Amino acid sequence: MVEIKTPEQIAKMRAAGLVVAAMHEACSEAAVPGASTKDLDEVAARVLAEHGAKPNFLGYGGFTGNICTSLNDVVVHGIPDAGTVLKSGDIIAIDAGAIIDGWHGDAAITVFVGEGHSAELHELSRVTRESMWAGIAAMKKGNRLVDVSKAVEGYVRRQPRPASGKYGIIEDYGGHGIGSQMHMDPHLLNYVDRRRGRGPRLVPGMCLAIEPMLSLGTAKTHVLSDEWTVKTNDGSWSSHWEHSVAVTEEGPLVLTAPDGGKAKLAEYGITAAPDPLAVR
Ligand code: MG
Image (cartoon, rainbow, N blue to C red; front, top):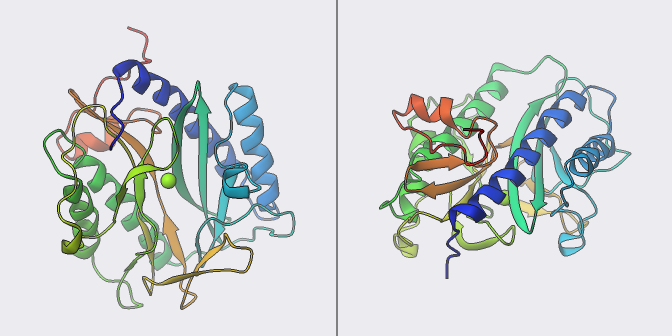
């Protein structure tokens, strides 16, 4: 069963989403050479406290961070740690979440630390981010879940290939339903698998976290002995972008984007749903 939210519940998820956006803003500013991933976690904890929000990552299955900090060839679930220090040229995915009144937000960004990154890395992050937006643009009433997967994969495959050969669309992880819990049905693949069928029809009140993860090489990953950190099997670097999105009668509402997705969706000729928390 997919949880369907009322407009009031979506407004609470929007409040949680704005806290996640604030965590990302503060963490990106703090992601400078010399900072540890533990420093970023402390920044995230401070933002949560300032907004009276609860962490959803901390304690999840025993996870010890408020955010996931995934550096370079780490795809997802990197654990914040005082011994992991950022240096110029790194890329770090910061996955953050927050709970307000029992309702969850979840989003991820890829941040460039310092300078000296190759054009290929910039393109990796751009293609990952834009494939997420292509998926978000498919979040409309009447579409099926597979239409979101198809939009993400289709975007990636239409892009010029990287010098390394081909983007790896990570297969072991994907998006998910979100609402009264962080991870709920349905699971959202970032590619089309015909064996899975078309999935449920998208209806107003359905909320999904859309989160493509791409590498400059393989689609295959493994988990380190800490039981969290996920790395690419070939050591290729990866990018991760994520937004939590609601399907509404009035179009998609990007719960974790400061503007609700207005500017980016306009590029797709789509009007984002009005922000339920905007002062009218
Ligand atoms: Mg997620």
